[in-house]
Length: 97
Length: 462
Ligand SMILES: [Zn+2]
Image (cartoon, rainbow over all chains, first blue to last red; front, side, top):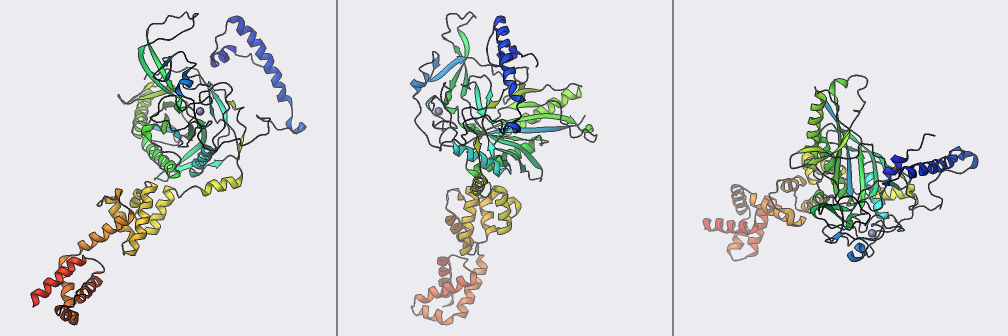
């Protein structure tokens, strides 16, 4: 298996890792991946189990188009330290045209 | 050098469900107080459980059916992972490899088919507003980077977060901006006929993202003629048909000029600058987007049976093209007349109702069509019956004076005994004469006017 690209993954996950952390997590994740890769060795026809992304057996869990009460603006903003005019305030997002 | 544009399109259509896609918050966010239609689900708080809105799923499938798509009997939601402040969970719930609908088409007036690659369901993001002003961020103590007190900042309103969004993706089948605009108008008309979205451009109900590249015409005859260019330029979030046309034309020119100089345009995302009518490179990550899609673990898969599909099909109203063809066939309209009368369901229904009423008065469907299209009468605030009445009235007035004179003289000559009875004071005889004249004019002419004329005529004689 190709060496796991920890920097790329950390960047995608928005995580800043020290070089020691990179080393450690890289090793751990490679182990996990090789463990999970064992699943690819299973022949589904042989064991009669189809690959799936859900194991509950549930399907079509939906709701009717009905509204229910929302939180108040005060409740919504209560955990934020930076608000302005009823909105969350965050550092500028570059969206220069 | 001559180039052939290769254009594809992604359109986001916001559905007009009452509630949001995965929670019960009201989806009607336009013009509301910020952050008042928000709950733990659409705020992306940990532990909140999204449950899909089945009306939105059905409407997504109906859009697919109206675009002649196949419906997936088994489908699912997936997580599309990326970081942006308008996306509180760090991922958008969307659909990856099994969209609800795929392989459809829209046929343009030239009979050219535009392939629909897929129609899938996702959730809208929050709304960001960019501001320049004094910043008073409370950064943690350990923050070491320098913070100036005059900082740009962004404000977030989550009322739009989680509103159901249907994305419609086409094949790169367009060759010019006119085809794109025609397609967009058709798509807008279809979702309005289905009554699943207001598709109001100005309110952001429909957002357009064309991807554009060009290839040399000289290559077309060679064996690689069907090969697509090795790059494409995406122009993001355009909210008007006029701007999409301008942005595409600008890109075709810009890319042609680069190729003329022997350069290949860069694959990138650009924004449309409506003030200067140009597209501008958006400084995004150089590396290719990596969304790391995976099946949404919180939402079990979605299945649809054949009988449910038939049920959805039965809910699809007659669509503009079918209606237009029927109007031509049933009412003898010209193509251009029928095209105008099916513009909205409201106009088409008004026309058909007026035709039904008009029939009783001997008024042809084409006459109603002409009056509606020429707008000789302002029918926008009328009932169909009132329009018919106006037509009947104007028809009466349209009777040439000479013709009426002749008919009256003829009747007076023919109905001598009725004339004598009238002169002897039998008022009913006048009504009899008016009726005779009206029968001759086939209902044209104003009865009061005719009565007046008969009296005048009889006066002349005595
Ligand atoms: Zn909510």
